[in-house]
Length: 125
Image (cartoon, one colour):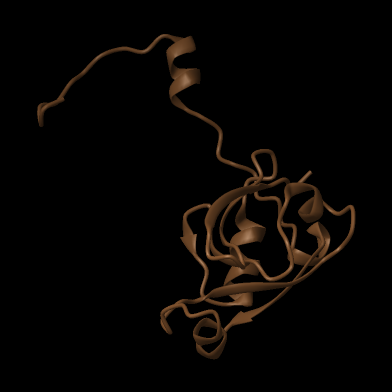
């Protein structure tokens, strides 16, 4: 506290609360949640009148009634981040999605086709 060492004792209850369990990776890929992904390229960014440095993973398909469909993501959306981790390609999206917490789901930072940026909770169960 304020750069000073603090020594104290914890009760069993306080210790249990202090040691939160690690998130369990869902290990679900884009296919399992109903997404088809491709790299979002510089040319695609320029077509949408976005800065050419804009990178992410383009949602090229969403399976009807899938977890992704029920979460509200749409074909043409660009995923910029997964749980705060920057997405620069379809492969980086896949890695971040597989590392997402199975119980909490994955929070996607999504660029919509109309230019709006939104957060979408992609359920993994």
